[in-house]
Each structure stands twice: as C-alpha cells, then as structure tokens.
Image 1 (cartoon, rainbow, N blue to C red):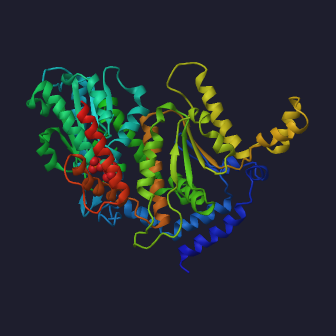
Image 2 (image 1 turned 120 degrees about the vertical axis):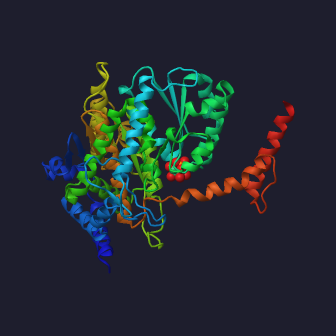
Image 3 (image 1 turned 90 degrees about the vertical axis):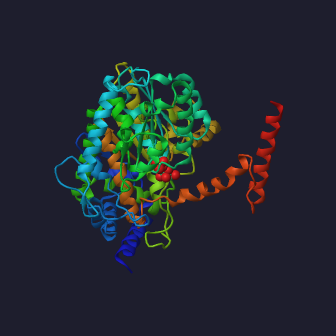
Length: 550
Ligand code: F6P
C-alpha cells in the first residue's frame, strides 16, 4: 500500500468514529476548543471549532497532505514548474502580486519585469481615465466603464468591484456584461451615453463566443453614434492574444497583456483587474495585491497545521471524502460580498470538478463538492430551513466583517447576532427534550405538545466554519481571495488532480458550434439525436412563425 493510500485508510478508520461524535460533547470535553481550533492571520480569524474534528483528525489530515507531497507541489507552484500538466504550463498567479525585489522564474526567465511593466501601464491608464486626461472621441471624460468578459474575465473583477464599491468615486460607474443573451447588454446600452462610455474587452483567448459577440454589438452601437474612428478611444482590451486584439481594431497602447501561466479564474490580479483599478484607483488595486501577497507568504512558509489555506483545504476534504457531505454553502454576512459565492463556484468547481487524476487514472473518491451560497441574512429566509432540519447535511462557511463601512445605526449588531446564532443553531441544535420543555413553558400540552416537539427539534451537529475580518478593505479582500485560491490548489493536490485546466467546458462549446448554423438559417447537423432534433426544429418553426407574423 502506498503512503498516500495508507493515509487515506487511516482517515477512513478515524472517520468511522467521527460519524458518532457530537459537537456538544466535543465542546464539553475541551473548554479550550475555540483557541485550539481557530487560526489568526493579521486581522483575519478562521474559526473551525464547530467542525466535526479533533486534534487527532488534523494530525491525520496533515499526514495525508505530507503523503500527497503537498510541500513539494507548493514549492513547484511558486517555482514556476509546469504543474498544469495537460496544458504544459505553470500556474504562477502568485507572481502577479509578488511585491519583493526577488525574481520569479518561469521557463528559466524572470517574469517580474514584464509583470511590473504591465502594472505600470495599468496605473498610467487608470490614473489618466480617472483624472479626465484620457477622454472619449468627443472630448468628454468617461462616466461609465463596461467590462465585457465572462468566467474568470468577469467574476473576479466584478466580485471585487462590488465588494469595495464603498471606496469608489460617485462619478464613475463600472458595469459587467458577460452573458451572450442580448438581454444582458441591450438594456445597459439603452442607459449609456456613447460619448462617455469606455469598453474593456477582457478575454484571455480573445476567442470566447460570448465575449466576442458582446464586443461586436458594443462596437456596432458605438460606431453608429460616434463613427469607426472612435473605436481606438472607446475600447481597450485585456488579453494574451495580441494579434486578435489588433484585428479587432484596438491599438497596442490600449491593449493590456498577461500570460498563459495565469489561469482565467486566477487572473483578477493581472490586467483583468483593470476595472478594479479604474473604479477604486491604482493605489487600492495595489493594496489588494499586497493582501494576496501576504497570504502567499503565509501559505509558502507556515507549518501545515497552522497554515490557513492548508487547514481550510483539509477540512474541505474531510467533509467531502470522509464524512460524505456533497455540497458546501458559502454564506457571506456582508451584502458587498454578494458575488463571492458565484466567484467561488468557478474557482472551486472549474478547478476541482474532475474525475481523473493527473496521470489519467480515475480519482476513485469524491472530488469537489457543489459550492453554492447566498448572503446572510437573506439566506435565512430562504433555504436555512433545509440547513437546520433537512435530510442533507451541508457544511457552511460564514464570512463577516467585525466593523461596517456604513453609518446606519442598529444594523451591524443585528447582522452579527444572526451570524453567530446560525452557527450555534447548526452546531448544537435543540433536543426534543429541550423543545418539549420550551413548549410546556409556553402552555402547550398533551398530544399537541408531543407533535410540535418533534417539529421543533433541531438535530444540530451540522458543521460550520467562520471567517471574520476587521473591515472589508482591499488588503483584507486580497488576503481572503488568496486563501481560497490556495485552498483550491491544496485540495487538488490531495485528490492528485490538476486544478488548473478545464477540459470539461469544451464539449458543450463544440456542440454549440455545430448547432449554431441551423439556428442562423443554415443546415441542420447530421446525426442529431431525436431529442435535440425535436427541440431544434421546434425553435426554428416557432421563430419562423413569429417572424412571419411581424
Ligand atoms: O469556458 C471556460 C473558460 O475558459 C474559463 O476558464 C475562462 O475564465 C472563461 O472561459 C473565459 O475565457 P476567456 O478569458 O479566454 O474569454
């Protein structure tokens, strides 16, 4: 048996006991449990004492990490090795936020001079737009920036812009258009003034269908109002494909680059973060990078058992593989983090939603859970019923700031009281005896008391973690995102998968390309299955019918 198989086997034996543990008992037997099961990094607190773990669990999980060679994979990532093996590339997003003078090598070359040059170009452009030195074709300063991109070219910058909007100036708005559904772009264009609108076409490949369609429509809208010559002043591009950007008509000075060693979902630290720099100013974008860099240093150097991304990942694997929980809820108790669940869905599920190992063999155990979530307290009035009393156990991750950035009295205390209460209710529940006692006190008697007591019992023992930040600053957010990024990588190492490719998105793209000509009035593809053929013909016939009526 390999060391890795032995580590999994030891954990499986341990988990057989863990399935009988109760969080009530774990807390009762260890008054120091909070101190023992929480980690602090700068002002970030990660409390995992309400997870179904003991000290021995963490020791066994750390042994698993060692058996999976985590420390050497981590070193290889920082050293620019081609750990993205199926695409034969490095995964070097840490270089994008590296702040020190040291070189970072990739394929024998120091990438830092290029990284710094691109950051300097972003800074110059962002400052010029914000000051009004760069203007549109009619001489107006820009009031609206529209980022056209999808997936990693949308979710990261969008999440950050929303999270830190309290730091944005009142006279600049940033919009994000991703969906190929014209219902996304069309109503936005209807509200905008072309003379004051700047478009960012953000696409690593500059071939993504949705982005290219939206960019073409935006371009047609702009040129209809301001003429072809306006393109160069109203469009910028962020891409690794300089050739395609040029063909679109965007000049090199308005084109921002990045590198194939930056995965889309890890790219918000590159020029893909241009909307962030435009909205918040470059100094704040740099604070975001600094926050991520400080987490990178911690991840690279802290011992496994005190290492936040490592412990975060070990708990995720414990819940998924050993306790058998198939989903994970991300619950930010902060309205500004409303796009965090969507961002994490791509980060985690596109990275680790895989069934074969790096060597092509089946993983043989469950990999990435389904990640979902919603901001609190909204979720409490929607799906928390299931979290507390449903038949599915969902490990939850609560995230909140100790201090708000608004001045409305009375809100933040209620928000935090709710967060704490939910973690308590999930962990400790309410026994049937306790429910019966509460009902009796309220004057309920007899059969009705017996019936209601069953409905009002909370099983508890439902694991959760809580992350607290002092305040939602760019630095704190950068640190938080980097924590999740590294956790995703660590989980991938434990499952022996490559977290940096995404072949699972390809088949759908190919099939859509085969079907598109038929929807555009051309021939139906041959050898179509009866269901798809039936649906396709229905759409074509109904659309023809509607067209005939017009
Ligand atoms: O389809 C998935 C994907 O390739 C993501 O990985 C990526 O973030 C997104 O599409 C957008 O790709 P691009 O930046 O090349 O337009």
